[in-house]
Structures are given as structure tokens and as C-alpha cells.
Image (cartoon, rainbow, N blue to C red; front, side, top):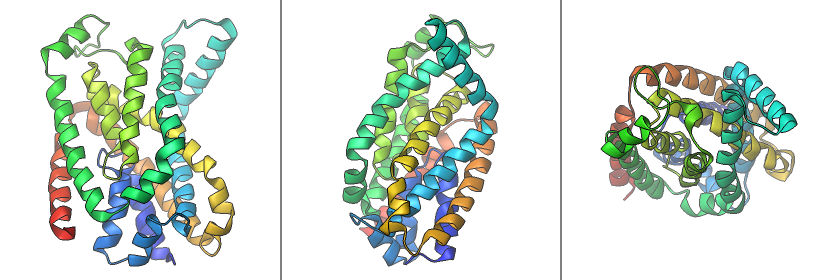
Length: 293
């Protein structure tokens, strides 16, 4: 059964790494095995277990932290969406961003609804998570490489740009938003990062690191919240029996860690890149492969 110490460690780990481009799911699979928490490892790959209920709490807490951090932005987005629906026009950047988020959420939402549970059960193994973590590192390196390609710079040149020469977020078209949102599907595999894949997709369309990260975090909020609320019966049902106090403690740790994480990352990506995270994934994933092979 889940202890309070395990709940705090896993909650903080999930909250912090959910937004870092290093995969929270991959780390939550690898770390318990390294620490010898065999009960947790077994629960992660079980069809029904207390870990399902635990994830509900972590997801909801992480989404609440994101909503709080971006509360002013979300107020403008919701207001813009309602105004756009009322007038049947898209007149402002906030209205456009609202619709970009709506259409970008659809691919991951549909695929996650159909396949999330199956993929989690099949691939929630330390060796698989380690291998996907290496793949995630390669994806991040690819994102930095592709951003420098002439095709991307030409795409930037055909749209309104920022003072630094990068494309503005509100110039994305809906097809591009669907593509960026669709990149989240890869994050159903433990070891592949949601924020990492969406940031790479944004960089490939000429956004800078700051706007790619912001769009990624805004896009993650309804997905994470919906995942938690959809699975609420797991928390309220038999899977949550006996562990709800631990889930509460773990969720508080996850919410605090997620807030600190997004605060750190929004500053990081003002001037820095994905390369340090890519190197970390390659090193950590390679070590884990050797350890679990």
C-alpha cells in the first residue's frame, strides 16, 4: 500500500516533471523501481489499483496549479472565447488564442480517451520508460536543430514577428495548432514528455522558446484537468479505499511542485533552450537502460 512518504515523493516528482520536458510518467515509472518500491511498480501496470486513484489527485492538483499561475491569461482566454461565440467572429489575439487551444486539445483528448489506459498498462515498465526517455532526448535535440533550418526561418518571415525576429503565437493557423496539439499524443508513452513534444512542434513552426513553452503549458491545462476529472470515479470508488489521505498529501505536494516548476520554466525559456533537458534525458535514460536491462 502507498505510504505517506511515497505519496509525497511521487507527488512532488509528478508535479515538477509534468511541465519539465523530461516526462513525469517516465520518471514515476523509473524512480520507484530504483528505490525498490515494488508494490508501487506493480500497481502502475495493473488494470485496477490504488495508483489509478492516486493519479487522479495528482492530475487535478497539477491542473489547479497551472490555472492559478496563468489565472489572468485564462480569464482573457475564456472572456475572448465567449465574446467570439457571441459575435461569431475572431477579432482579437485573445479570441484567436482561445480557438487555437480548443482545436489543439482535440487530438490528444480523443486519443487519450481511447488509448491512455491501455498504453499505460502495456508500457509502464522501467526498461520501456528508460528507452522512451532516450527517445525524448533525441526529440528535444531534433527540435533545436529543426528550428535553425532555413524552412523554419522562411515560415517566420511570412508571418508577423516579435522584436527578436520570431513568429508571434497568435499568427498560428488552426491546422498548425492541431499539429502541435497532436504532438501530445506521444506523451501517452512513459518517457516521452508532453511539454517537450509540444514545444518542439511549436519551435518547428517558428515560435520562440518562450511562446512555445507558454502555449504548451496552456494546452496542457485542460488535458490534465480533464484526465483527472474523467477518472474521478477511480478516486471515489474502491481503488481509492484506504489511500485517500495519502492521495491528499501527494496532491498537495504535486500542486506546489507544479507551481514552482512553471514559474521556473517561464523564466528559463526567456533566454535558454531545450538542450540541457535533452542531455539529461539521454544520460538518465541510458543509465536506466543499463540498470534494468
